[in-house]
Length: 159
Image 1 (cartoon, rainbow, N blue to C red):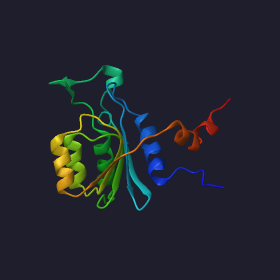
Image 2 (cartoon, rainbow, N blue to C red):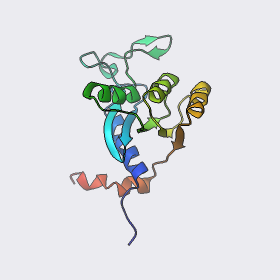
Image 3 (cartoon, rainbow, N blue to C red):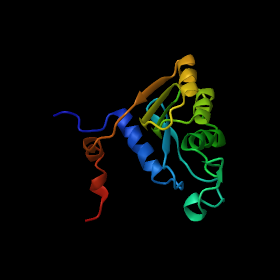
Image 4 (cartoon, rainbow, N blue to C red):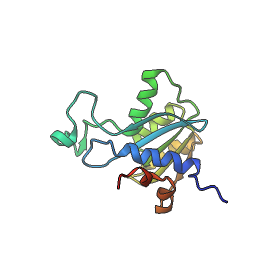
């Protein structure tokens, strides 16, 4: 019988999608998981600084069309590693949406070697140049209903 489990990439991406469900941003829910040696080292979602008002409670704080209240999911994951002394060098990131330019620069500087993502989101040309310059892998994944079913999340729904 074939292995019915999710493969590693889908397994980590499902976790990123689950983290996105914790997002407090009204504009876009994003989740990110940092992985090294097939082990999750951190996860994050986009939301406000701890203790601040959330966009879902008090609307976005927009400056020049951008919400400046929100910390991006990728940054939250990397900051979690910094806070607890976990190295990100050589890790991969699984993120629901292609990282913005600032997050791309931060991920590259943190030593991320591969970016896996689900959805394109204003993919920046300069970010792509930097990714190529640093020889960082980029892979767009898809989550299909079959993959979600194999995650067996419905096994935990009370009927």
